[in-house]
Image 1 (tube, rainbow, N blue to C red):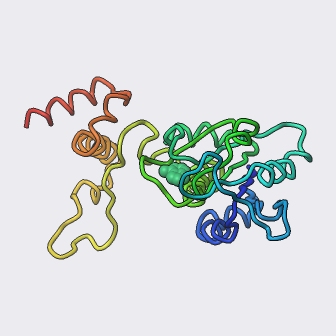
Image 2 (cartoon, protein in one colour):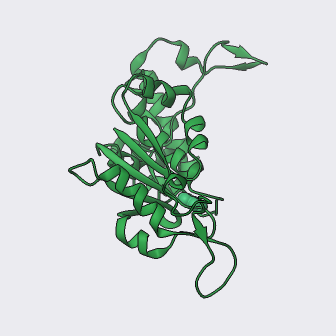
Length: 243
Ligand code: ADE
């Protein structure tokens, strides 16, 4: 998967995604992250990329030409036009389902805005998807794109060394993850649940399923409505709810 990011702050992206699992995934060529500095496509000698808004008002607006040129520098070499995702609080809210859908693409382009926004004409011309990472306003799209790339990349085969964990963690089946424990078996008088030390895998799986259901019921009951529950799951929840 190749991620192209049009931004005014390429160093922020390179640093943010350069270490840990996403950094290793790049080293192993499982993913490629290319930053395109919009300022390199500025039309004037001062390298200015923003201007006052027509009609007045506060703040500056990013001009269309440098963004369009930056976009062309990516797509002129490509036969298929990748989706262009503009990070904006006005977009569709990012979630695990969207991460899964996007992880199937071969190449994506992201556009990070700054200042008061981007000239609407270039948005109309190049953007295919508008995405928000939540109902709050960031100073720019860079942190949002990093969140998206992290969530998408971990779904790409071999990015996580343990192939199981990408699919068993929270949200894939609309259930939260069961609690995890490691050594020591007793920490400040608190014991790890006996069942996890029993070595009885069937019972452990059953206990974990129960814990997932109960946790989801307690912390995110909204998710339960979307979860696929077996008759056994429903019985567990019924029993728990009556307690
Ligand atoms: N840019 C500013 N705020 C944002 C948000 N919440 N999500 C995505 N991009 C943004």
